[in-house]
Length: 149
Image (cartoon, rainbow, N blue to C red; front, side, top):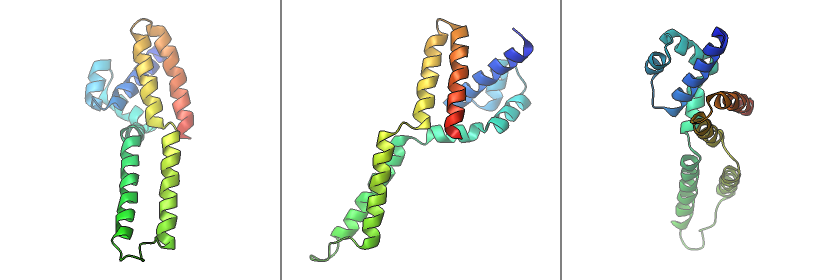
């Protein structure tokens, strides 16, 4: 295996480890036998912090927040006197937009879910075929990068 291939493999492993949120950059450097400066550079160029933030913002947490907003609007309207419990135009518009966003998010697969599935599959394959796991990981990384554009 060439030095370049070894470096790329380490870089991909470092990214996977970083995205789990279990390891700090210093720990990853030690485990992979590379300098901390390399990890810092790879993370900066690859925007690893942004990737990890996207992963940690779960679909469930976003949906929970939006449902809470709808419930708050509903409560605000219900607190009005009888006969005045009708949403204003602005409130109706807000509820429609939130409901549409909920519907869209509930039916789409997010990047975090995609990364999670990709990582789990790579870990599964790595247990019995390291070379195949590297190949799959290359394809997944390209796919995830295409989703971020």
